Amino acid sequence: MENKWDFQVNDIVTMKKKHPCGSDQFRILRVGADFRLACLGCGHQMMLPRTKVTKACKNVLHENVKKA
Picture 1: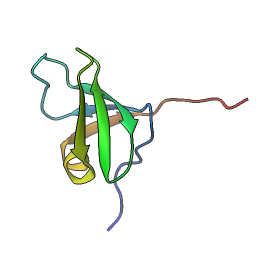
Picture 2: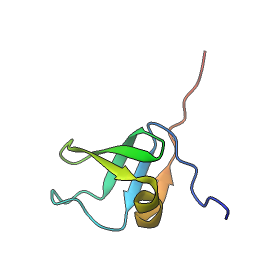
Picture 3: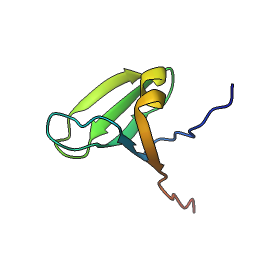
Picture 4: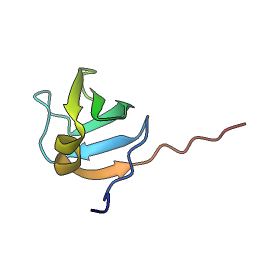
């Protein structure tokens, strides 16, 4: 099975469902079997399993990090 999304720390993901605060964008803080996401609207942090994040994700905005 091919992985549709390439998730990395500090990427911004847009989810299908909105957070109760009204925002649908989250920053990825931790990647692994579980993801730690921070809501960009209210700052609430949550842990979600990878399978749930990949199913609920609409779009990924990759953070362009320049390494010196």
